[in-house]
Image 1: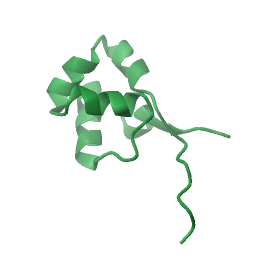
Image 2: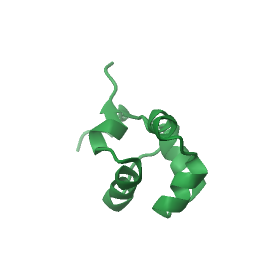
Image 3: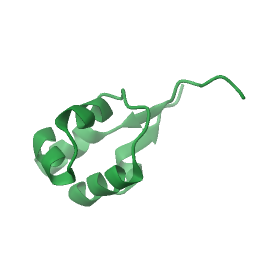
Length: 74
């Protein structure tokens, strides 16, 4: 099994929150996760995200997963 590669997934939560005039705290309440967990995601420190959380974020921000996540080019 190859060694774990550092991920290059970039999260665009700040931009989407700004576009919707929503705070991280408000999104956390709507999605049902802690502000700390969303902050980890927002700051590109997350190693994984549950599909149910991703679905809830996309529902509340009226977006698609590709609007929230992209791959950084190195």
